[in-house]
Image (cartoon, rainbow, N blue to C red; front, side, top):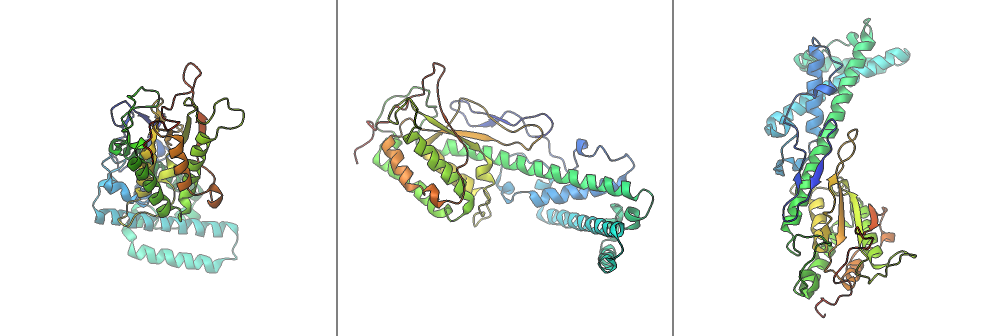
Length: 388
């Protein structure tokens, strides 16, 4: 997403999540607004920009992009494997050559006491020029003195530096946008695949029934089993600790209102909402699955969440400000049929926050409706639960 657009997800009852802001069309060229400092005749700088753009995008492109059906930000994601490897390799050569030139220029500008280092860098550049003469020449990097001793050397160096930095920023934004879109798709699929409750919010009326999954013995055991498997698999990974701590804090507050709160924990109108950034799941620094799926952690976490929570649908899920990369926020509430007794069982299945190495993520809010009264939980006291 670029410019003043804000990524927004609108959830409609009975339907999947959908992006209300369409993704930009694929393009392998640097965005015009990031290249305004390049003159129309600066062909070498344009070539340098293209290689930087290709290298950073290919380097930051998630492995999971091949598994996503979303529109890609750039044509690089649709390139063949061999072409992508070549683009990455060429971009690496170009950027390393520019870094050497910057280092040589810095040494020469500061003092003359590092001739040995300067000679080593010069020799490395000469070797690179022999192997990649055409590549460096098309980017204007073949002759070092263009950046170090000529009259316009400082201006030229600044132009190249600005181009490199702009392409790196744009690549980071594209990678973040891809991960955001992947997260939205996962969120939609997780909600569609979860058959443990109807498509509804806590505010919508439902038929009272004791056959709900969250009220049956087998259903509750399935929820606990899902949580146990997740904790066993991911607790050793410190990247999961903020999420686990946040989930524990969320359930604990639902069971134990803060002092001064007029609602008792068994009061059906006492409902807590947990809001956190989508990056908590997509950027958790948890190793990818054996098959290379970098979103396996997010997928497993959403499976746990949807087993006994509902996604809040009262508000849009929006991205960040135009100046920053888009950042989705999601909110969950306890499903109305999940009793406090079940929540206590879930709390016992989660690790104690004191044993985790990260603070709880997200924010907690006690919900109220337009009349100033909280949304009701129908089975808070467990009267719909099957006897154990």
